[in-house]
Length: 136
Image 1 (cartoon, rainbow, N blue to C red):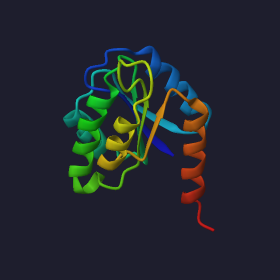
Image 2: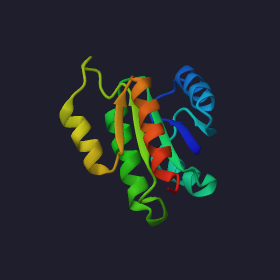
Image 3: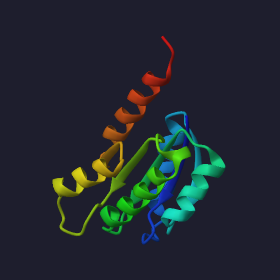
Image 4: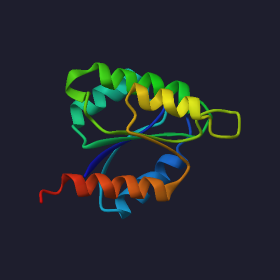
């Protein structure tokens, strides 16, 4: 599976992206990295240009909810990207705990999964997606 990996618009951290890239590649996926501080327009352009099978967004700075919401809304507004699976992980906010109202808003906007910092959940989501894509 070809995965487009990206940081969110306001997040300049890169260590998470390096780690996730290695993790995803270990799982057998091809990874295209857009890097940190990727706004919604650049993300959409990257998806249109690279044609990934999935997008993984990562946030460390605690603004994942705000940035992720803008990103997924932009992707869903693009007809060619409306069905592209989008996963958001990392810190959604600065409250220090998961806010279910934020998770609900993200999934209603079009995120296929909001996983926090749980790599086992990401591994499970990827495995479930791969099983769906294999013809019976």
